[in-house]
Length: 132
Image (cartoon, rainbow, N blue to C red; front, side, top):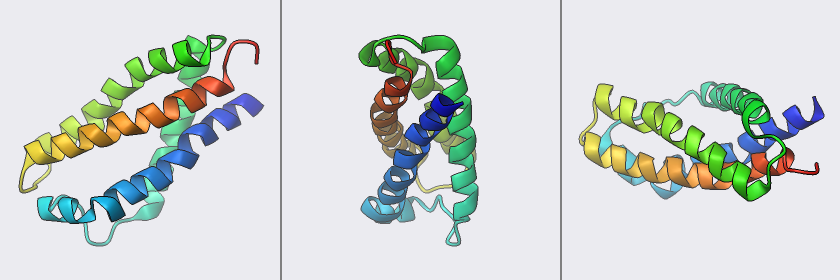
């Protein structure tokens, strides 16, 4: 149970500030020009989403990749999680939501999802690493 909690924290703790600064500070003007986000975002929904994702990814990691080295586990996890997350965080959103440029949104969200999994994959892998 301790490793599960640590793996969830390894996902959630970097995800919130990374997402906050990427979407609401660093590239806020760009996203505003795309007209994709609500003006009154519901931050608790975002946090709950991150928590659900963290639990699911932690359980899947434990079942599929536990006991591997950090590098091997992180690469294998990212190879699974990144395209799946990209499909619903970038591709599906750009396909169904109104915005000024679905292609521009797809580009910036692809960059975000990639950075996100470059950061969280080794952290989760460290929790379940070989010899731990």
